[in-house]
Image (cartoon, rainbow, N blue to C red; front, side, top):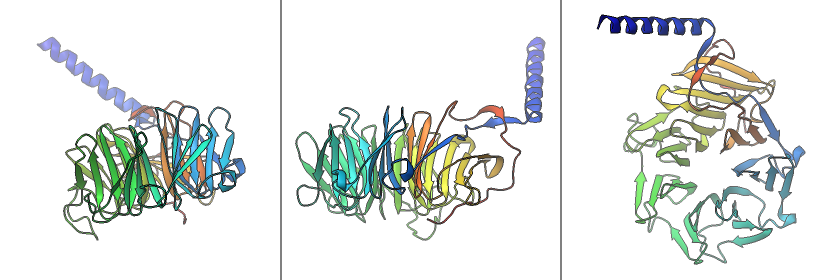
Amino acid sequence: MCMIHQWISKGLIVLALSMVFASAAGAARLPYVYTDWQHFTVKDGLPNDHVFAVEADETKVWVGTENGLACIDKRTGKVKSWTEAEGLPWRVVSALDMNPKTGELWVGLFGGGLARFSGGRVDHWHQLNSGLVNDVVYGVAVENDNVWVATTAGASRFNTVTGEWTIYTEKNAPMEEIWNYGVCQSDGKVFLSVWGSGILEFDIKTENWKDYLDPDGEMEIDLYRDDGIVHVITTGVSHVDDVLWVSSYFGMCRYDGRYWRGYYAHETGLPSDFGNAVKGRSADEGWYATDKGVGVVTDFSTDTWITYTMDPNTHEGVAVVTRNKEVLETVRSPRGIPHNYALWVEIDGDDVWVGTSKGLARGKGAGYYPGLKERPLHAPAAQKVVQTGTSK
């Protein structure tokens, strides 16, 4: 027993010394920071710099803009665009999703309904020729043989095999309001983010609904901490690894099936409480697109964040790493996101794509690792996080 105690004591001493030496050398357990950013704008072939949606596959990245659709070849960097002049049924592309089995691209049109790009052919559905509940489309999600469409007047489900349409509104779904902002699907469930109705969960097998609301019923404030969704006006939803990531206009949140965690700018790495969209990478990592930059939960258990913004004075990229609001490092790069009004985030393997009101950015993830690992600090710890957002 004495020898065991000696081994344990020696091990603790070695561990303590290694931690001291690591600290002295400027190392710490830190997340991966994106510093290599590539920009795409109208100068590179985009039909418009206002980017609403991004959808990536193995070789291509599809981009929905205010004036058309673009496709970026990831191998060559070449951009091809479609506007109404090239056969696009409507000008504004607000949502995108790819059918992984067929390669069909489903396109949500803001005021023009729904389109399908497949083998050079474009099919178009709208209120006058289909069961689409409204032509103002905010979100699209492919679920097996079905395509779900989130619109300003409810949600529609289109069965691509039978041609059957199903409409969901306050009459047959728990929608207090019918303005649907976003939709996603995973693990046998479809999730809708709805203005005034929080998050709605649809069980594909049973076709039963479940709603997630703020239990305190207060619209002005989050009265009780972590009791549910921070606000019922939700703008985005992402479900990955049994975790629900939610964005709203009044803060963000995460739900693991048992516990809620609310996020606000004054206490985390969020650059703003005004969320436009969210994309979960894993149960521990979620990306929030806001009106003042991108806030990333990089490690949930330690509350470690990265805030990505563009310095409006120098146009450099700024990444601030925080843990429990304490700044661990500030990293500047020649480029970052093109603008601080971020509208979309797409995870593409180790890379990320960020759509903004002034162009699209690709964060190249060479050497990316999830969570935290021991590495040298990029820069000494700086002052508290500085809001560097600019107006839209």
